[in-house]
Amino acid sequence: MEVYEEHKKNLSLLRTDELRTVGRSKREFKKELRFVKEASDLFLETFGVLSSQNVQAFSNSKDACYRISYRIFRVARCAFKSSLEGYYDVSFALLRIAYENHLLMTYLTKNEKEAELWFGGKKFKPKFIREKVSYADDSLYKEMSEFIHSSFRSTLAFTEVEKGKTKAILGEYSKESLGNMLLLILMTMTATIIWLSSTFAEIMDNEEWHSSFRKTVPKIWKYLKKQNIKS
Image (cartoon, rainbow, N blue to C red; front, top):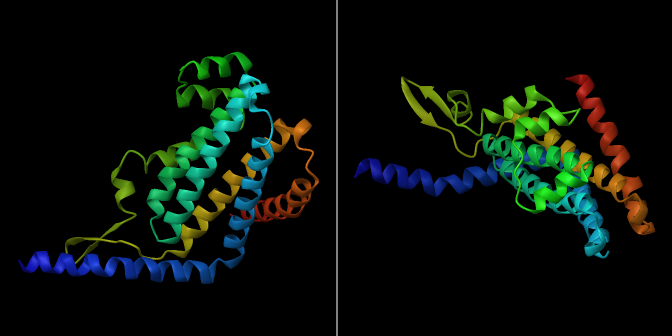
């Protein structure tokens, strides 16, 4: 009974820990969080412009790009929210899903016949897609996979040994982990927006959208390049 009451108490405090982590995340990463908001707004604006078009007139490859891109956005938003609360291992696993979808989107955009087969139910193995997309990074993929398949290493993100006992860590803040997650989220969202703008360049004639794109993408991309140099 004592053990039960202790766990019950810990569970009641979990939300407090999460909110404390959210507070620290927002205080220490103001610029990055502003960038995520701006990238999210631009993504929705981009999808809004595309949704106003006659989707039936899209080629199979463009329709696949259109559909998969929004899945990427949804997954990235989930990764963002879990990162703010301290669930960095979960965010990393989600970002592998987004990464796989981004590579698939890239491949299908360039291959009309394959996109047609995809609409018919064909599935493409991740390894096949990574071999076909020139900028795919196997090392990054393997790193993300650690958190998909529940390797021992992945459990180190939320456990620690204290006095010979394994202690669960929930909702606790890590500046380094959050910084890494925000970079990957920004990279995923910005790269997808750029891909959409290139793929649908001939119909992205909305001046308001162009203004938003010019104000948002260059500064975020410049920031990401600086972070890569530092690392």
